[in-house]
Image (cartoon, rainbow, N blue to C red; front, side, top):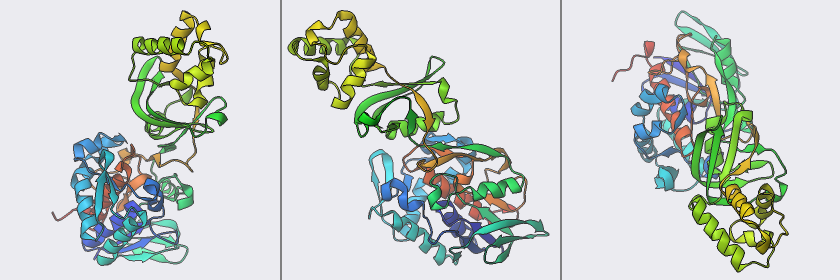
Length: 414
């Protein structure tokens, strides 16, 4: 019987352990925390958006880095199969807006419990509060995994320790260190699905929620991102759904080359918006502009927008010139925001970067450099947009790695 050690008891590790044990391997799972799935508990605001109910080709379209690499794993274990597994192990699920899948209970802890049930049913031996210190070299067909409590001899090891995001959950880069020690190249890690620090004082704008706006980004004068939806102004700059998506696309680019703009009225073209302004200025001709603008914007934004258009907030509406009105329309459609940096890993939903995919087999998740060493989940250089895609990547890669590790040379008996 093949002996497999899985390092990490998060989404990828639990799935890898279950898959390997289901294929007949003797599996030991080592988790450094006091409980399993610590990061799962905080996903989806504590509800756990565990996958996205869409076909594999659509799923792969939401992968930012590593889509080609993930193709086989996602087709082999797609969202549909994950949902079936949930039902099999007594976790009813529901589908919400954007095909996001949640447990019916709305408790993220139930997802972890389901994965634990699956592992225990397959005979996985789980060790908590156990920290792996070293992955030994391969001797004949076995290698030693050294923890702070014991040494385990195994035929295969699966590294599923996560990335660097939310380090408070135990994602402290252990797997990246192990991969380096084994000779792997690590693609530099950066935060993804995270807010953006911006230039200027945003303290008075904190908490302003913008709906049905368009956020767009330019690099070298070319639009590289344009999407309509919701965003949030914070004490440090910008966040919310649109910003998280944008961060995944620009986190490997020099931010000094990126220009950001907000279109507050994407439903109105320039001509229509100008006509709306003419009407407002006429109807409220004796009022100050900072008050007139409240018909178009949240109160906290009126003065910043007027300042950007070089119009005094105290200027009366009937004193605004045609040129000033044209400038105001332009600012409403192109309000500039200067990005300075991404927020830290402590706030990032996922890590972008990790073990170089060129050195990992996409069919088995096995290292091309070190026999019987496998990788799964966020430790790999793969990441996707929000909506359950990143957890499904963990499940698909975990499933693939676990099944392959259970067999000599990764040969599966289909």
